[in-house]
Amino acid sequence: MPLVSVVMPVHNSAATLGASVRSVLAQTHSDVELLVTDDASTDGSMDLLQDLARQDVRVRPQAAPEQGGAARARNLAVAWARGEYVAFLDSDDMWLPGKVERQLAFAAGGDAPLTFTSYYKVAGDYTGEACDFTPNGRVVAARERVTYRDMLVQDHIGALTAMYDRTVLGTRLMPDMPKRQDYALWLSIMRDGHPARGLQEPLAVYRAGRAGSLSSNKLALVEHNWRLYREHEHLSVFRSTRALAGATWHSVRKSHIY
Image 1 (cartoon, rainbow, N blue to C red):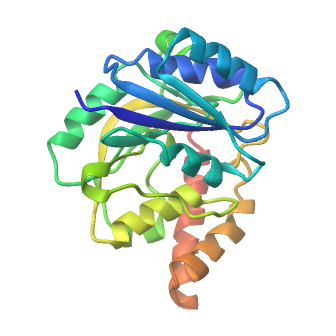
Image 2 (image 1 turned 30 degrees about the horizontal axis):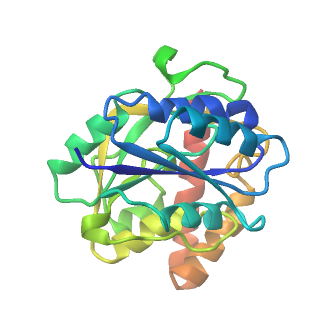
């Protein structure tokens, strides 16, 4: 029964936070700790987290010393993780009940310390709970295997489904970037020679097109992807241009999964 450390950054997410937390606590693999960093919320998110922590000791909230963005909030949580595995979930997305159990079994059967799954998309104003979710046809499908070269052209990994093995990779933090910090982490893991494997079963629920989402404005990501390729991956202008074209096309294609 490996312990899974679930990392969740929070900023003014009181409307969706409860459902996200409950989707973790309801996992059939119950040996989880939910490490939540509140990034200077002003809507009562921290009060809600403290209430949830009193109800279940697996919820471990902390307040960031100052507002620093999603990467810093996630890294503060990762820094006090105790689990053999680190998984990621944002405070407006959800996991289906068997997600951790199915992904752990999948990870144990392969040679990749980074795994991910397919996931469902729902409307940004979806108000249901993960335990009541009815599967729909809006599925972002996971590729079976992804290498560094594949990832340069497309970000194939939904952050809400990603999980890595600390016993193999050690503790890996996200670069302190305003956006695309999750993409940069996957790239750094695969640049070190570790492929990623995808479980094609959809096991998470992503609220699409929600106001304020870091990924809601696809055009805004172009600049951040370019900086990622040039400054973080140190690619040439030619390779960066080719990668950017692929990433933009992939992002547009995913946005058309209605």
